Image 1 (cartoon, rainbow, N blue to C red):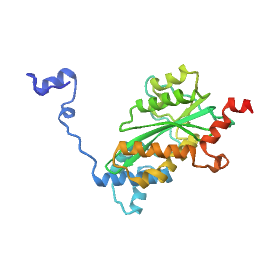
Image 2: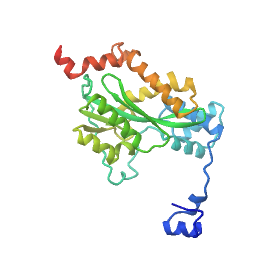
Image 3: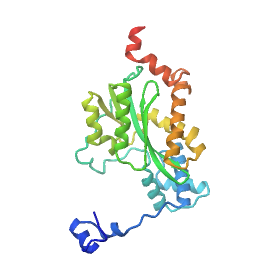
Image 4: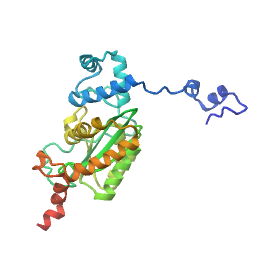
Length: 276
């Protein structure tokens, strides 16, 4: 820890700790109102056209009357944790110690609750900033089992959501995610392995492999986030608590027979079907 009051100069302390002086002297600059508006627009465009990279995004922003350079658009997209969805070559090696698991859901008939769970992360715009949302969803019923917010992309909030879902609902046979570092981290996969859960991961650039939770993000943003323009993470947390309770218990889905996620979840649990 750098101590500016210490007898040793800051330069010497940085050298002893092998730290860059620029990191010590740097004062973070808050996002401008223009960048926040650009990020809000980029988020909406990405929901509609997830295949757009920074060049395509720049052009689409121009169509909406927002002129911005491609490099700046790329920087904002990286800050938001989003990228174009398309088949990519393997240009980089996986993170050391992070195993990539095969996709297990191809051709699988998923009709029971707790057969397959899935999880993902999305960017949430706020009136004066942004945060990230992760959720754990039951594949067959579309029920949101747990969710967490964070102002960073550290794996801990994904782990908290996973542990809550297991505590409240037991364990699934299979857990599916993308290949994001939060989900390939040993802390995350170890929880799944210890509970006897088979791990499945989307193919590289295959957003359709986790389609139901991708649809959830579009639904929650258009039905809640974009309408409310929350001012803080606390406001987002309170608003989403109400929204997800309504989503599970009252919102009917055509894809599950015009029933609610709670109805489908409770009636398709293996023990419920055995009792019929």
